[in-house]
Length: 133
Image (cartoon, rainbow, N blue to C red; front, side, top):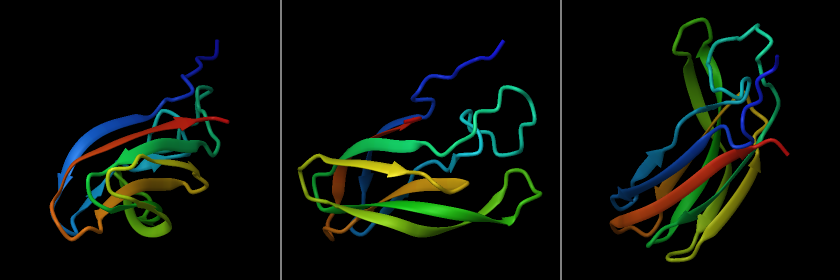
């Protein structure tokens, strides 16, 4: 019997504050497995593929939403050691909903929100979820 996971198996909904030019990193997303494990799963329940990461960001001040991809620096350790670099950046205008949709094509990815207003950016709201197609 195969267990199907919901389309949005990964959901993040957060509200947070940033100091001027501050940064917040979201969770790392392991696209090898819908359940989010970081080590190989050789069972029948493995869900692989490259999902879409959808969501919206609302920031009182200007901000950047950055999708970062990672490469393992020492892949045999658990938890795995990752080195992240920027892949795509979207500018979020102050007080306006900024939708996003990324096709996550890397093994590991994370979202990063960086303040670009230069002042305290309090009450930022971010919601993100994975979908299959």
